[in-house]
Length: 404
Image (cartoon, rainbow, N blue to C red):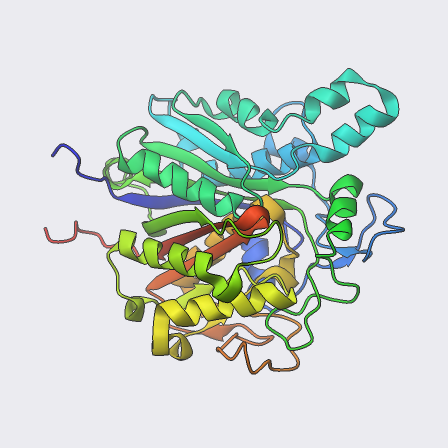
């Protein structure tokens, strides 16, 4: 029927981060309550507010069969490797390239470390690798993408927005298959700026804890394959989950601080649930943005309680940031992958480094250890500098059309 929205499902997952160079490693370490935060070794962190970060180790781009690293910054290499894992996971590497396949990638800093190299050496190759669209540009060739290919940069909501925008393109018939996610790499210039903004803690990251004092950053990429339900059914491939709802907005309040009471986040959550056609009581788990900064975690807690009401106290709410570091544009995408796996396995990941309860952040934050929990619907929230908010609602896939 004209105007009828297509259902959107997730058929492939890919992850590179401090917890591992595959989805299996990432999920195993996350649910075994491990943190990937450690001293930064790729550059001298002297002068930064903290020497710790979620640095990716033992990463070898050549193992992915994606050609040369020429023109690709470390961040772009993460994106392509995660995209290749997701593409293979979805069984698409065995298929002839077809029309209607595209991508929405996102990044906050592009090839910042390559820009640093260009400033030092004047090497034009380093300048080319700074390109924010480099990863998506290579993906076009590597995966035969002839549909829409877009690169977003919406601060730390970028990864969630990438998935939501890609889902919307499928919903409205602009594509059948989309690669979507985020990527960023640790760099001296990025961490210098974030240190200047004083978002980085001088000790360790403690989401929702009374003694939280800031965040720590990480690097990597999270990528998913989204398809229309009809397309996935036609291919006969397993389906992880369904994208039920998406919303994005802006606080229009402050560069770094959330608006009072988290009103912008409230609106994003409400609109995502309305887009999914779900009541607050149908949510089983919330994956929070929770960066460990004093004002954000409070505002996010207030937003969740305002939207979910008393039900907020009946379900788990956790943050991945103390395990992976805040992975910038990749954060929302990696968190969406964790949500998908929580749906699959009935396990919610922990909020690490939680020691002292905050009476104002008084929800069940899954302290320090993953928990078994029946999960059918998850709500994932991201927020970023400049007041950017984005929310996704994901659910277990139903084999039949609703109402059929």
